[in-house]
Image (tube, rainbow, N blue to C red):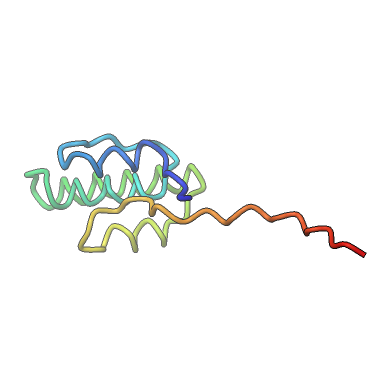
Length: 97
C-alpha cells in the first residue's frame, strides 16, 4: 500500500500545466521557486525579488528553508514523494499447547 501525497503535490503529476502552490508545503514552495526561475519570463532582478518573497514566506511558516532551497535546485519538479506505508503490525498467532 502506498501513501498518497497531498493533492497540491499529486495534481502536478497529472498535468505539467498545474501551477498551484499550497502554503506551508515544502515541496510546493520549492516548485514555486522553480516556476519563477524556469517558466516566468521576467528579468533577473524581478525573479530574485519574487524568490526572496517565497523564502520570506517559508521562514514565516516555519518550513525548512535549506530543504526548500535544495529541492528548488533539483533538475526535476519538486513533488512530495509517494512512499510506501508501513505494513500494519500483525497479531501473534496463538499456538496450541
